[in-house]
Image 1 (cartoon, helix red, strand yellow):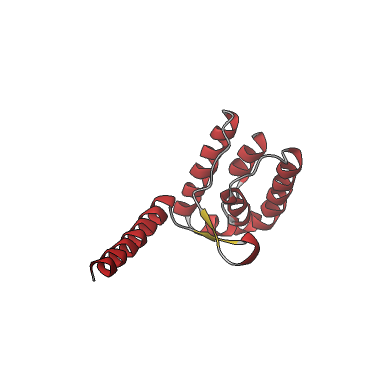
Image 2: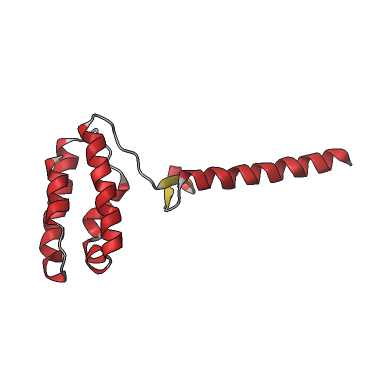
Length: 128
């Protein structure tokens, strides 16, 4: 995962280096995908590749992305396949999905509340 560490170390801090870095980062991503075809990298890795301009403008965002990528690198180096913090929900035809930027816990809570509402409706209808 030296390639991913190199991305973090070389990530631009000014707008001047964004285009060259992004080209290099795209090449690193292609290399990882071709060399490790059975490893599905979390979507945040691709976001890292394409968000250099945002990291330059927002240091807090940069720090968050760097920490997330570092955690994925540690997972990979310890033999664990990292999981995305994003949640993909299948909507529409042919199993296509939409990636939602919220936590899995939040989705479980919302789903549980919907289920409770449905149970309440059934109870009320059964009481009639």
